[in-house]
Amino acid sequence: MSISAPMSISASQKRFRFEYAWVLFLLALVPRLSIIFVPIPTQLDRTLPDDAYYYFLTARNIVDTGVPAVDGIHPSNGWHPLWMLINVGVYALRFDDPDVPVRILLALGAICDSLVAVVLFRVGRRYLGNGAALVGAGAYAINAMPLLQAVNGLETGLAALFIALSGAQTLALIEAPSPRRAALWGVLFGLCFLARTDTALVLVWFGIYALYRLNMRERVRLIPLAALLALALVTPWLLWNQANFGSALTQSSSIAVPWAAETRFRIHNPDVSIWQLSWTLLADGKYWLRGDYLGAPLMIGIVLWPLGLWGVWRQRGNRLAMYTLLIILGGLSLIAVHVFVRHFPRIWYFAVMAEGLSFALMCFWSALSWPRVRLIALATLAVGMVTMGVVTWSIGYYPWQQRHQYAAALWVRDNTPPGTLIGSLNSGIIGYYGERPTVNLDGVVNTQAFAAIQESRLFDFIKSAGIRYFVDTDFALANEYGVFMGAGYPEGLQAVASMPEAYPELGYIRVYRVVENPD
Image (tube, rainbow, N blue to C red; front, top):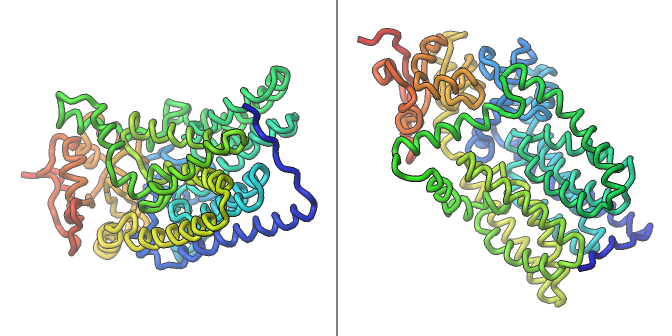
């Protein structure tokens, strides 16, 4: 099968396309930036997860004490280094209002993700022309899945940008192999890995494709150069992990909650294979309908992906179709690992699928040969994307956080002396707005807590750490981590307050005093 070469571009076309690219950038940026000015409590319900505050707290503690710890006490590597470096830079500036650095970081994520639309456009127009590229990149710009995940305070927008750049550079290297392009390819791969380490599952497909397309002489001459530069960038991070946590590649955030989930499943289902847990997660309709696995907002992905895949098949002689398949394979690899190995899918893990959908829609647009159908398809796409995006925003991804965790944080701030040590399984929001050192107890950003969970002595760790109050939901305590508490639980936790409103499935969030020697 022949692969079509990139289209030739005149100088005037380049000027027009440059302008189109930055129109797309603004189309993506305006709705993303508008979210960062929404009151923070509302953002907590809609887009801003508790995990983001692990970055904010750790960065602040690095600046203040040099300790990479959420609580300033227990060091952790449960974060991705490039985004943490950016967080540290922001928190080094110092602000009286704690919301200002949060908004700055959300804005940086929004800018990164808006640039993704520019990269997608520039790649797409080389192979399918201006119209298809505008449609596909425009779909990404208004796609609520990457739009809302880009302003989640995590590394999602940064990682999406480096995936897009790494893929674009893969194509550039294949088209015109040179040491300079190979060097940039290696640098981008290294930065992409540092932006989010599991992007390696996407990068490996780009690497395989480059190896396949380059001839033997080019492989020998260029691949080692790229590999050495990528390795030079990531090695300091790997050595730091090895020296401080005993493993170059393992991060506490990657293993703590998955280990607990798998162990609970085995305790409650001793005669059932762990594969049943994986298949349950894969078959769970909420992940598909909400668009987690599909890179699209509520229900839209189920409609758009068949159309996009039809377009990819129709454009199978075009290099962009092959590239689209590589991104899809990368996304499927991420789904496989997070569902079948980690048993813990989160929506921002799969944002790369939105890039794949963008290119698939470019192929679909090019495959359509009827102007009237194209017009109907374009209008339907725009209305559907915007409508489902608004619905997703109105529902929110975390509708319990403002009334539970934020309210609990304010209770802690107003009812405990400064310096009181708090403990929580979900400690980000409580630690940040409670203004008290808050120990993470599910082990995501606390290797000592994770060790205690593995040994079923979590309550002993709570006491030995000097924690005075434990704060979390009924569900998290009783259903998820009560089994790992060990001796002293539940009599060692004395309820002193609860937030006024329960949330379905989670129950109330309560404040417990830690009792050293209960009767």
